[in-house]
Image (tube, rainbow, N blue to C red; front, top):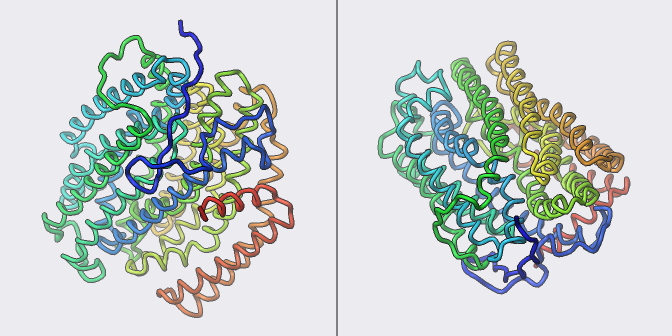
Length: 589
């Protein structure tokens, strides 16, 4: 039986601009340190101010990581195009992420934060031994899974994309890429477990900043590939003409990026006062209970990954068919590129807000304070919506000029990527809402409900993808799959919202949340209509080259932002002023 003990005193924070300990920024606090008894979860009170500061720090780090990730995507497209060669790389590159998330990624990102917070509160050593046991268990598990996966690479590639069996050269290339990419799952796990140890201690920046190192190394490897073999627009390489040296360069660069990303976390964890060492005394220390909770997260991820496998298989069928008909940029590579761009606002805003909030929500749930949990969920929904809603409309209005500017080397494939991005568009809103709502279940260590919710989402997504594949022409099949992705999460939000409301035994501040989303939509819709009309007029007049696309995107973007901010202020969206003020303050510092 455990005895409650006072939480350990806060350790010194880090200067996140360098990979070494430094003086703490004067304004930075752990999100749980400012809870002056109650509050409604909104406004500019101390409890929300602490979250905004932590969220802003993570958002800045995520912006840096996402911008370098965006540049990485551009360099990849310039090096290997957006057609079947890139499809082979994408199939291989998605495998380690899929397996990692299936094995332990979901648990690390949700189940173990409350466990780490509890061990800090209740254990004599401030949770250090528990953190080391968790790290050791994750590394051992992922090490074994990585070895098995590398040996089974041909089977895994064929499972992900059965259509590759018809093209032996493309299958061999994807398998070779997979053997370089699969070991990255080990370093993904190391990076995440070290990041969660820091997050539980109120230190959020390192986990958001270090992916930029990974991106820089991958950019360097693909840039070197372009220097050696020329850009794709000139080389026109395919699975049969790319050299072993070229494959090796891209594969090693992809692996090395994750290695550096993981190792860069170590100085931060040490500076937070945690002495890292392997511990194999796993029995009797709560890990079994945690993994018991994680079994539902495993099923959650399994359901999600099955939906991903369906989409990957169908997209890799449709892409080559459409490419033979003269429509490149319509396969799984184009889908993944558009998905990555579409997820940027979610990663920068919603994930930052909720990563800062989750330890505090976990403390409130552990104390049985459902009112505080409701307030923080409401806060997360309303605060993230300030950016998520206009971004969703921006993708719908400006998806084509975004893609034609960023992927100019892809020719007509760039416009097709733009159509996919437009189809994703409005689905960003329910995707973000569900992410926030599910944190409420995880705070109460309820992992079964998110599993059931994800089954619903996966089934709707898979059904929509299959319908798109069999009903739409090959050129538009992946566009339909992108639209079905957002539709699936809209259905999932309805299910999750009702269940969480019942779990908390009261309203989720629904009227206030709906009012905020309604006002933001009312501000975004006319702004998107005006910006989209202007952008397509300029594209028609100037063409889809670099100049025409840049002009259309900049002019349309300015119109959208100005109209949105003006209308949102006129509609008295208080969260907009709070978010803009905090981001300006953090950015200037």
